[in-house]
Image (cartoon, rainbow, N blue to C red):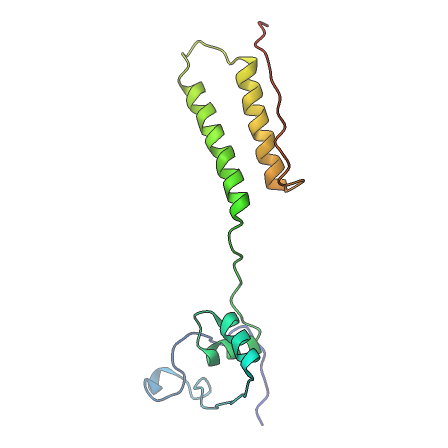
Length: 145
């Protein structure tokens, strides 16, 4: 009986390892010559089909048994994407306004307040504290300083 070797160098590629072709390129130890059959009920098969995604059933079961499943990438949080896109648009408008000012013109307190408020909202959303609470509204007046 062969000793089971749990190493990270097991090849899980989609390349055939059955040995029916390209035998010269694959060592005899690497050829996949054993077949394991499994019976599933309808519910188990549906679950397998959902989890395997684009992988073949046997390929996914092999990866699962070797604990080599690909990482699961979560779906995009559309609410977060919309909120961050909105903040990005506001910051771009502020940047365009500031870029359009003359070179010797200083930033007003209102402009600085607007930038500060948007950066705070961005930080707040990135940190996900009270993630979808209403944005804090505030007004600033220009003051000569």
